[in-house]
Amino acid sequence: MHDLAGESVLIAAGGRSILLQLADPQIGHGVADHSNFAARPLDRLNGTLSYVYAIACGTPAEAAHATARVNRAHQPVQSDGTGGGPAYSAYTPQLQLWVAATLYDSAIMMYELIYGVLDEARADAIYLEYAALGTALQVPPGLWPATRADFAVYWQARLGELATDAATRSVARQLLHSPTGPLWLRLGMPFARFLTIGLLPASVRDLFDLPWTPNAERRFRRTLRVIRAVYPALPQRMRHWPKNHYLRSLRASMAAVS
Image (cartoon, rainbow, N blue to C red):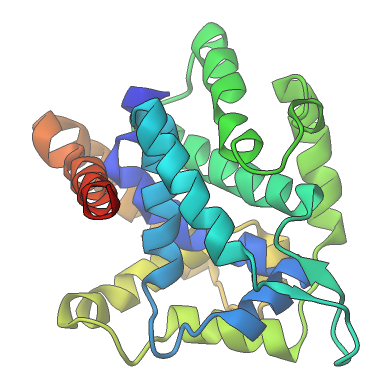
């Protein structure tokens, strides 16, 4: 898991993970009520990457620090539903399971699109290791599907339960069309939006009213071929730079409070 999770190309599937999370009504309303993609478009992605790298690639102390930080951020994310939306709590194990599942599925999808299908033994080992993304928080170990086959059944069932409304579609638009953030983000947003939409299941594209045409699919496939030709040839220090950056930032945060 350490080597796979450290590959920066997996970040290309980050938007896919977030949209899949938003398509769960409870998570979507939690984000809509307690996040601000319009003003701070990178907050959720940065927080997620810091946590994933700490759990997958960090020391036990770094993982514990990142987990505590996520738990603090989750504390106010709850609602009893009296405002008209669904009741939710960021501490709900089933919701945290879905978040971890989207991270796992998106990472494996992106990795295999670039490097090819994993062999069975490695795929099984990585799958069991990815359970830590949820079990480090409030997901009981027994809640993570026991095998990859069990996960596939769970995944298909959950896709059928997803739904959006005006509030969650608005958050998705803010994510995909952010007018704020650093210049590099705004310049790269059209390409990131294109990749995100292309990586989504067709049913989830429909939930968010995201257009996709046969011509877009052809351009998407050509783009993947270019990435497959270029990315694996890059030096590892370049491919793993984001992981090293986020772990350095995490260590600086730990030093500041020690």
